[in-house]
Amino acid sequence: MSIQSRTIHRFLKTFAAAATATALIAGTAACGLDGDDGTADAADADVVNIGVLYPKTGQYAEYGRLFEQGLELAKDEVNADGGLQGKQLGLVYYDTQSDPKQDASVAPKLAADASVIAVVGDYASPASAAASPTFQQAGLVHYGFNNSSPTFTETGDHVWSPAIGTDSYERAYADAAAKIGKKVSVVYIENDWGKQAYEYFKEQAAKNGTEIVYESSYLPDSTDLSPILIPARDAKPDLIVDIGYGPDGALIANTLRDKLGYEGPFFGGQETAEFLDLAGDNAEGAVITGSFSAEGTENPGAQAFVKAFKERYGNNPGNFEVTAYQAIKDLAYAANKTEPTREGIQKALQTVDDFPLYQGNDTTFSFDQETRRAPGINPILLVVKDGKFVPYEA
Image (tube, rainbow, N blue to C red; front, side, top):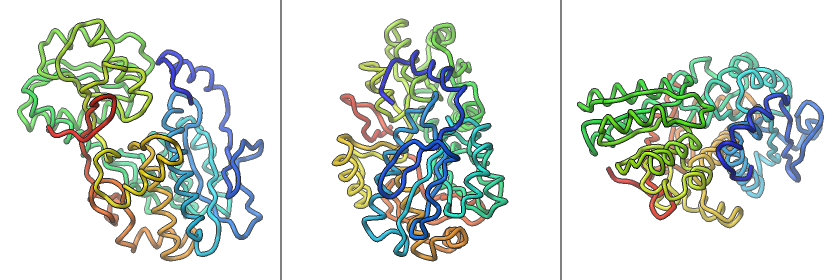
């Protein structure tokens, strides 16, 4: 998806909502749109597939684009290194627009495809959670690599997530805010994730003795947030915090800086080229939480990933690309530790304690078998400096 104005970005949702999920097939040799049910060529016994639920179109398409880059790079590296015990790895893409209804609709197709040994995605936890019960019933691992909701894995023992939890992210955010000042104004997106994230932030802020002098939610499709940002500014906070997505953060930064004359610290945005493009100079100094920094990683595996990604795509990867890349690497590692089957993937996630890690400075991680999450992966803080996200020390 080309980077464009926030208004056009939001209109994509309206135009795309009427479309049904379109399957994009990425086999071992080529990618292309397919007019059938989205399954890959299951007749080839030398190919095993991982299903992908992701937003290729719609309001979250920018994240789908970033995911696909990381997924494809990982798949090609796995195949170049011998595949999965001699079998080639394919990816079976379903464009769900990260809509729970579409996720629930395509989940039975993936569950019925015998060539699919695991499923990754979707972008948003509510969309992913709509598909999880079908995969659980089919004995098919659902690997929610971007699903930070602490309740995501509660569907059953085949639902896993290496993503850092929303609670961890917001505690880090609130701790960083407390080092700047004792009074903050907070605005947050009005959806399940935004409301949950704000509750975690507010809880940690209270523990830190931080006073929230103003709070307000905003609708995901908002185009003018002046009515809530004026009182946020006038409350005279030491810091204004946005808990939302990239385009929202850009709109807020632009409104605060260009229209309202706010010159104080700002936390908000996401590590995407889209946010940097939409916010322009107003992105400078914006602080976000993340899990990875291409500019500052000391992890040898991550450094190799950054080099390979830059050679292929011409730019550094960010948090969304690395987590997608790691998901395929993790599942390939699982398949080669046991066997490239649904049962083999589940067994490996239950027993392997050295999955490759590309976030932070550790090189491996393992799952907590009760929560099926990876508690050892911790968030970091990033700041925009000279138009790039770099590590931030509060």
